[in-house]
Image (cartoon, rainbow, N blue to C red; front, side, top):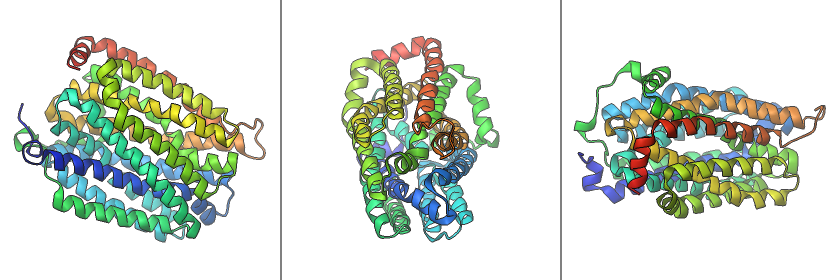
Length: 419
């Protein structure tokens, strides 16, 4: 197997950049999450239970643009390399944060989120970069490090955002934009290319549109089952970014700072699990059992959140939910292990496209559910309804996962044997 340039010459630095890249980008996102309810209430003149509906629409715009752009960018990275796609995405993200920081109307806020949806190829392209520079048996641990970088961003970002938001609602957006631009400069001078020229393939617009990516992988049902699992899980998991901040305000009367602290705890749990536990867990139990266990744990955590009537209960549940973070890296190890190197970018692009498709609908579904059961005139007052809905959807994700394991029995056994 031909090694990519980053593997030969800059292995450690290349891997470090991808981790830092994801961490800084997530730090930027983490900074703005605690203040989004305050900003939306300020711009709309509505209370939290009503403003959450606008938050759902903004999330849907992000998902729509992400859905359209992700496979296009994934295929571009297969043709021209990962480096230019990563750098362009990071720069555009910085512009997006600045637009949102200066926004004095909901229209500008929607434009900013649309740009963010277009530019947020960092995660899927970073996964393709990892696939380029690691061997199949090491990818679960590497994908776990990507998850840990996300967790780090959520440890530090929300705390910073919460404290900055107490000073001024717009300040976190400018801080996030500055971080994105610093990240671009770091990548421009440090990041090597990971995809060797001989491993690149011609760009094909038919495979670069979102539905084209699905059509390609629909011919490979053994992979498609796992992609469907990730898609359903993404639909459910969006309850966290879509409703967590609003849920905290509505159910617990949290301030921006308190929202930031709670999110920091979520990030700390995620970082610890994914940095320290995913590698050993996958090595001990294999990717299939690890993914199945993570799926079950996620269902349990979501049900517990649904009935957490007191703030302290949230903090007691966070460690349980963090253990569920082993699921996606384990599935990524399975899918990347049964897909050729030449198509890793397209695999990540197709997976991200389905996740983005879910993000078109899920923010609306989750925020509308929260609004319907938390409004003053709600026939049944149950602020945890969105988490219960997410638990049901996560449980349903077990169906395509089981079918995928059965369809890939031989290859999955090989992956498990190589652990």
